[in-house]
Amino acid sequence: MITVKNLRVSFGAMRAVDDVSFHVGAEETFGLVGESGCGKSTLLRVLCGLNRDWQGEITIAGEVITPNRSRAFFKSVQMVFQDPYGSLHPRHSVNTVLTEPLSIHRMDRADARVAEMLDQVGLGAAFRYRYPHQLSGGQRQRLAIARALILEPKVLLLDEPTSALDVSVQAEILNLLSEIRQTRRLTCILVSHDLAVISYMCKRIGVMNNGKILEELSATQLNSNTGHHRYTVQLLTASRGYDHALAKELPDDGERA
Image (cartoon, rainbow, N blue to C red; front, side):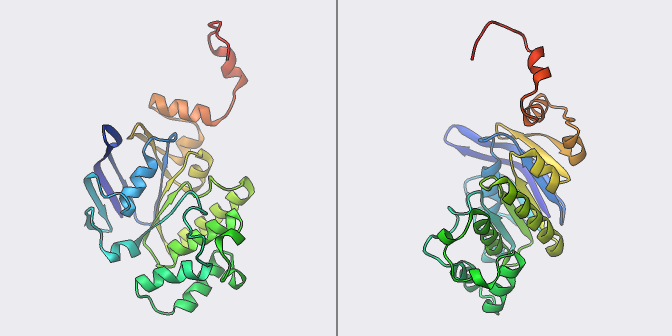
């Protein structure tokens, strides 16, 4: 469904995405992990059409993608952003948020589609005329997911969709995304720095650092802390948190924090 070859994105002298190549099969969820600033979100912004300044080759659903995208592309490829409040217009009601994309893409049955979508993401008719400030963080993210899905896309790009939420709400959103992915047979790319989230949602994971994909892991390798690249080993070790045994093995050079 998605093929990326030798993708490069620069901001001045800084190479944010450096010669990245990977593929994602139809109905697969591919994960990208790495520390903040490694290029994960920049890569997604290129794929969804928000960043037009890039070099390389991108193919989605058999179509060669250029910096200038068609209306049909934006209907087929949708994105859910990290900050649910920042991605919603504060003066637009839930109804407006959901009907606007339907109007832009000239889709019929607007009222029925909005009602069905609200039910599917667990909000319901009672939320239809509320505003973002009247919703909790989890409810805002459900609305953002509904906005992306109401156009019936084939590809869903997820940029840290749970990192701004409480832990208890994260599980609800992940379960919702997992269920929707299966019922709608979506192809997804999930960006996260949370390895538990990635291993729950993805079977294949790319490890990024300094704009490059250093290696690909299976979910089994991720869960067993099995990586080949030195950075991957460090990332997996750091994800386990503070380790007393590991700390005792570090050399004592007399420095104090």
